[in-house]
Length: 159
Ligand SMILES: Cc1cc2nc3c(=O)[nH]c(=O)nc-3n(C[C@H](O)[C@H](O)[C@H](O)COP(=O)(O)O)c2cc1C
Image 1 (cartoon, rainbow, N blue to C red):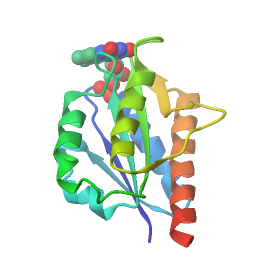
Image 2 (cartoon, protein in one colour):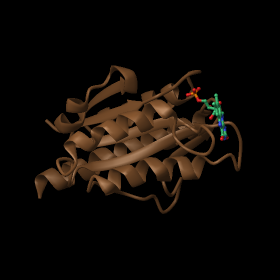
Image 3 (cartoon, rainbow, N blue to C red):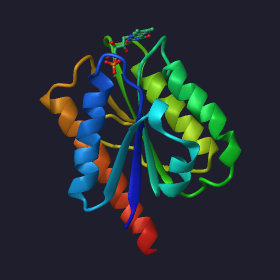
Image 4 (cartoon, rainbow, N blue to C red):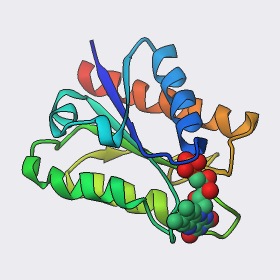
């Protein structure tokens, strides 16, 4: 069965709520979802997953240090994550606060690992975003992210 790892950091719970909605989307596609806070995850979790979705609050226009530190340690598996599907989501404090640069920074790290990132022509183009606590619309977008990544994982596994 395909597995998608939802790896996130959250201090005050907003990104965690987004992670739960992403998880719901993954599960709705019949794909196994493993949701882990970054401090509970091991690098081996990356190897085991067919898809990896990263979530972080926006801190000074980029991801939280905890997520960056984990990604820096992932150099241990450089080249081994190639072809897996990736995506990112972030919660921020306000409009123009750097949330797009945050999701792009996480997506860039996954691209450097050789992963495949699907954009979104209609919703959040680079990755799902929320201002503060996710409202119903933001949760719907998070669920959609989970569904899209799960569908792409299934397509790639079938080919
Ligand atoms: C250290 C720190 C830096 C932050 N920097 C930004 C920022 O640059 N832009 C922004 O929009 N919000 C910023 N925020 C606000 C958080 O992104 C926002 O509160 C977010 O929803 C927190 O997510 P969490 O509940 O998952 O921890 C910052 C918060 C903290 C604590």
